[in-house]
Image (cartoon, rainbow, N blue to C red):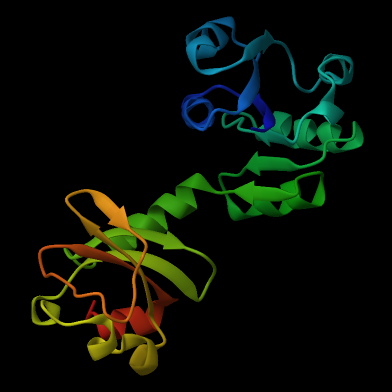
Length: 215
């Protein structure tokens, strides 16, 4: 369990609060809008109404006590930038901030943010990859080269073992798991037999995966 300071309770911030709650983390959420704070109360440990660009207000929250500080402000980049900078000045261990553009990402990294999330860019990449093939069920980009894909098992793979397919040797692709009836099995061995009615999680270079699965 970690202690998280979440600043900004718009749609993005609220979804973060819900997920952190699902993961049983302690969350103090801050927003200058009372209605937003009240709506988030079922998903957070505590809520505060205040201005995150006010140094005295932020200082009163005990910034050093949080494992992570998340700046999820989406409607005012100036406030987001000032908040990230103040958090770092007040001794925040880790600051994760939201960016809407590449320029914002650069400014945040130069002014207090340890990491930057770029929801619009990440969603655009996911959508672009997802729509290239009806066989792609999910996609996670790890860096510019490597990604994890969840794909339907090709029909001609049905009844064959991981060893027989040998896609690791041929394409440098690792099969991480098999999902059947909604249940994910990560215990994959060379003797695991694949079923064309299931899906698999694979890790590898995007170009290699595209070639292997003819995406």
